Length: 454
Image (cartoon, rainbow, N blue to C red; front, side, top):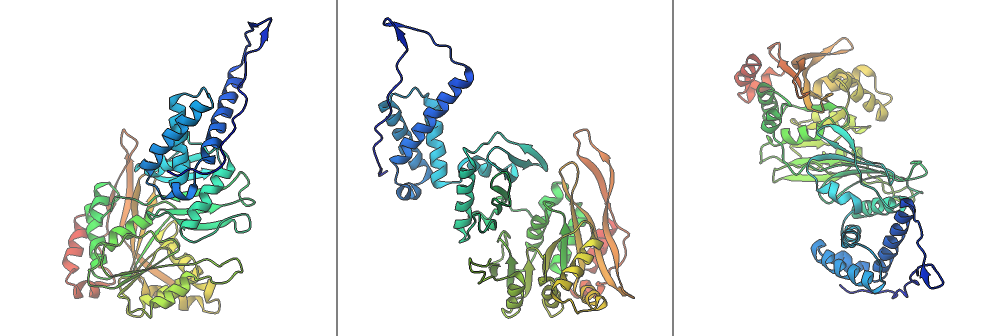
């Protein structure tokens, strides 16, 4: 590793206090000793950073950089006669390596596959979610400045900018993990980073059923819905598993279809060979250049898609999504934030009105009833498990009310000794409103068998 910068002249080492050439003992409190050790570590870190060319260091693999940093830290500690243990020297080398080629203290959390979410609420408050439960960690940043530097590094990797003049940012890591950043003055206790980790495990509906997220009958119904090109809205709260469900259902899409995905931060993991991934763009510093999800949905209609998948519908693009579902793009998927299937319809209606305020409510509901076939409601329950709580079909419009029928509902029965909730998925076994579509694909009998076996 090339090293550049000033050679530190060091500082005068402290000498013992003496009276008449006899050493005198001095009582040092634990707090004072810890402060002195902290100052020595900080000084050693500064000396190391002065000898490093960050450009060269950033191009090295982590293992090679760490090896050279270990040697440099040991050399400087010996030269400056610092009483720093080998363990602390190794820790400093690892911290600097992570800062140079990674994301500092976040690196071990990002490498831990048991962690789903990472939440940084300032330099001293870092929480993670493990199996649906929030846990405070012992991870600490040196200062708010280090948090800010890591946040800006994350934003820069996807060509975005975050600072006090532009304090909100959505970004993603190179592995696809979704990141939200809030800077002061909006964040009062220092920069905040929220990371929804990209799952390395590729879930399908079978693995979700094996995890208890649904029953085999629910799994079969969702497989048929995907194969029969039903238009599906996946609804749920934050962190309920909507994207995971969307990824799982998308695995049933035929490999001969052209799929266009639209997201704020790309995180879908489609396995098909013919996928076009589109991502929104924020405005620049002059307030220009913004590309919204609505712009992308409109453009997608000109790209000859067989299916359009919107990662999350949250605004006026809901109207264009309904238009797409109603104009030959059957089998399209999207997700919305809502607590129940009925609430999902209300939310879609409200979002359509954001961009079409003059459109009558009945006209909007007619569009929804004609476009959407199924709503899959997912819930993160109190045991931390994520389950399909309801599958509802859209039957049509009676007066001004969209009519719905439940296909499956989760009925709570109690909990096991380990705290896991118990329940069953029940179905009334009714023939669906889209029976013609099931007949067309030859899937009516398998659909009805799945309902009867529930």
